[in-house]
Image (cartoon, rainbow, N blue to C red):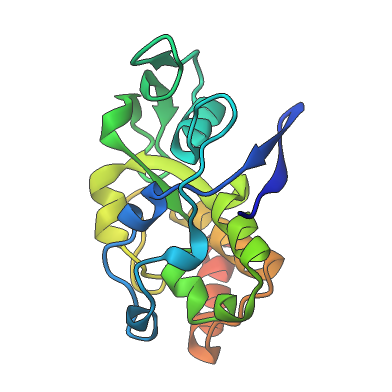
Length: 190
């Protein structure tokens, strides 16, 4: 069992990736297809407060207090989330996927396969790399980088965040991808 501590606001939490992550990637890259699902990034453990990582991400990013399905506080039902992909307000948690800005399968092909299990878990749970967004848009994105898919709104911020995570984790995009990122962000600055 691997765990890591991340800071979320004024509190630190032990975070363990849950199996929902494997459901968020629907189009793994060719090189990643040989790996069973996304087992290198996941765990089936829950937090001591009965919340899995999806619930933790929803609680942390809601702009209002969330409502849970039961008194046990395991499954988030409602809250208020502003989608970075559209700017839309989403109040029903079942309409949300937690997007990995840098998809796990994309990262695998660009260096994550050499990481330790602890580093993979840190990457998969890093709040900088997680966004609550419309499920349909997250699924259309799949494992694509921004040179293949962009959200309908907030494209400059999305690409800037993508590049920030790539640099933070020292991932190795191709020369063409790096050139695309640079050109796109230069255009955003104009």
